[in-house]
Structures are given as structure tokens and as C-alpha cells.
Amino acid sequence: MLANADRFERINVTLGPSAGDAMLRLMADRIHALAGAHAASGTVTARFGSDEFAVLLRLDPTPAAAGKGAPDDAGPTACDALARRLVESLGAPYRVAGTGVHASASVGVVGIDASHRHAVAVMQDAGLAMREAKRLGGARHSVFTPALRTQAWQRGSLEADLRRALDEAQLFVVYQPIVSLADGAIEGMEALVRWRHPQRGVVPPDQFIGIAEETGLIQMLGEWVLRQACDQLVRWQRTLGPRAPRSMSVNLSRAQVLEPSIVGTVARALAASGLAAGALQLEVTESLAAQDAVVQQRLEELKALGLTLALDDFGTGYSSLASLHLLPVDVVKIDRSFVGQSAAGTHHRVLVEAVSMVARSLGLTIVAEGVETHAQAQLLAALDCHKAQGYFYARPMTDGDATAWLAAR
Ligand code: C2E
Ligand code: CA
Ligand code: CA
Image 1 (cartoon, rainbow, N blue to C red):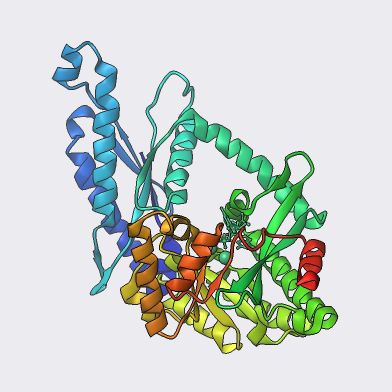
Image 2: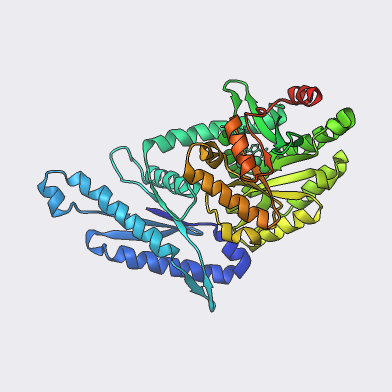
């Protein structure tokens, strides 16, 4: 098992390196305490890197399993239980230098078998499983499977391709209208990035934003999208006059908001394009916005530029109507998974209605995402949503198609 503390840099940065050292000692103690319980079967623990610990243990088959003639089954189950306890133990609150600290760790588990000819191969597989646990959000364990090797390889090749994509202009931006539910007026456009891969064809953002985040390429990619989007709205304002959309929405991912330079990047994109700040809307997801003081501060700084902030995908993740008033947002976008089912079932309709009521009481604008039918649009209007976006109105369009679509209205 390979245990790695989640976002340990933050602890070093916020509490100082000596508190970081103290945290690591406490983590080591907890690992010892747990692994010690298995000392009889020969357990080895080690600190492998800065915030990385390894536990090597031999799990003897339980008598029951051995009796059934299936000694191999005992290992995985016991190992799973131990990994779970390890994650739980490392995730319990810490006390460092008189203050309580919350931290967690991700654990990768690998069963050593004949395919592991060297210790290095074992560590590699444990590392893949550990990183998978982090990718799934951290504070959990993942068990190695050979598929993780293939995925890592594919990600590696996509990563190299993505670096080239930026240089070779394979990325492009499509635009999807956001309309007023009251009168169908075009309120804005959302910029969505696409990648025209030379072999794979058009790759959707879900398949490469994560890679861009992991590799740091998101900063360049994000800035590029932002510039395209701002320039495009200015072009529409010039050529379409009053028929131009009122605002442009651009998505920001977690890694972008955590980077302190984002405020300067946005300010420069506005200045370079000549777009008024009030015409730019940045969209962040709820789990990010609710996260911590650093993020909230960053969002306030962005808002101070004069732009608006939207809470994207509301209803997924850590949704909390109760904490909506704590976030510095102007707009709430109700996730399409709720919108899509709102016309079909009471449960989702009531949820949309509740979100709409709370958001309204806070003076927020409500946008329903993923509207695909007339019935959904009618229902959302009846539930007091302000705006809508979805295939019912228009699919995301290339700049040329979007220009024609706007001009035809
Ligand atoms: P999102 O911000 O929630 O964007 C809306 C997604 O819903 C888009 O998917 C859009 O094509 C899709 N959609 C719109 N209307 C409908 C509908 O009626 N039915 C259905 N089934 N889907 C609809 P897309 O373009 O694949 O983008 C996926 C996600 O990728 C976005 O979700 C956003 O989180 C992220 N993303 C896209 N562009 C960027 C970008 O430039 N930067 C960052 N950081 N993230 C981006
Ligand atoms: Ca969005
Ligand atoms: Ca969304």
C-alpha cells in the first residue's frame, strides 16, 4: 500500500514547514499503529518520499478461506479492509502546534504477483492506484488493476498530443446561446472548447480538461479560450450591434482558480479585447467555490474586476442550499441532470423549484442547463427560472455558425 497525503503543499504553505514535519510524524504514528496490528504476519513500513508512506504486509489466508481451498481470496478482502481503515485513520483530525488541522490521504493498493519481477514494478503499480484514488477525489483507496496501466499510457500519449495541439492550433471554441425564458431573447453565449485531434477527430472537453489540469497546460489553454471568447463577443458587438449577445460565459476549472495569476490573466484579456468587464461571466463549479478561504478570496478578486460569477452544475457534488448565500456568485446554473428529469418526475421538479426559490430569495439569476424539449422549457418558466440553455434552443456552434444563427434572429 502506498499512502500519499492529499494536497500536502497547502499544509506547508499555510502552517509552515515545521508544522508540516509534525504532521508527517503524526501520520507515520497512525500508520505504525495500524500496521502494528499485523506485525505477526511480518509488516514493513517506510517513508518513501516527502509525504508518501509505504506499507508492505503479508496477509495469511484466514482459516475459513483456507478451509474452502481458496487461500487467494483472503488477501484482497483483508487488504481492502485495512486500506479502508488506513484512509479513515489518516483522515481523522490532527492537532499540530495547538491548532486542529484537517488532512486526508489517498492509498494505492497492489497485490504482488508473478507479473512483478522487481520491487520497482510493484511501486509503479501502487503509484498508479494511488494516483487513481487522488483522481477520484482523494481521501480514499484504489486497488491496482492492469487497466490502470493502459489508461496511464493513453493519458501519456494524449498529454503529448495536447502540448502540440496548443502550438498547432487544433483547439477551437464553440458557442451555445443562453436565452431568456420569458421572451426568448438571447441573453448570452457560453464558450466551450473543442479539440480537433488529427487522428481521433473532435475530442470533447471532458476527455482533455482533466489532463490539462494535471499537466499544468490548463493555464495556457484557459487563457487562450478566454481571449478567443472576449474577442468574439467584441466582434459580434461590432458587426451585429443590438443583436449581439449581452454577455459571454467562460468556464474556469479548479486549477485555474487556484493559480493567483488568474486575476491578472482575466484583466489582460478584457483590456486586450476591449470588452467591458460587465459583459464577461466566469463559471465555476460548486465544489470548488465552497472549498476554502483562498478560493473565496480569489473569486472576490475576480468579481472586483466588474465581471459576474456563475455557479455551474448546481445540484451535483456538494450541493447545499444552505451555503448558497456564502458564495460570491450572481448566477446559479441548475445542472442538466435535474433539468432533464424535471418534466418526467416529481422529485426532480421539486428540487428545481426549491433551488429556484432559494436562489431568487438571494437575488440570484437562475439558468437551467440542458433544456431539450418544449415541455421542459415551459415547466422551467413556470418554476420561475430566468434563463435556459440547451439543445432545444441551439447546440454549441462554431463561430461562423453562431454568427449566422445570431444574424438570422
Ligand atoms: P458545462 O460548463 O456544464 O457545459 C455544458 C455542457 O452541456 C456542454 O458540454 C454542452 O455541449 C452540453 N449541453 C448543452 N446543452 C445540452 C443539452 O440540451 N443536452 C445535453 N445532453 N447536453 C447539453 P461540453 O461542451 O462537452 O463541455 C463539457 C464540460 O467541459 C463543460 O460543462 C465544462 O465544465 C467543461 N469545459 C468546456 N469548455 C471548457 C473550457 O474552455 N475551460 C474549462 N475549464 N472547462 C471547459
Ligand atoms: Ca459551464
Ligand atoms: Ca454546467
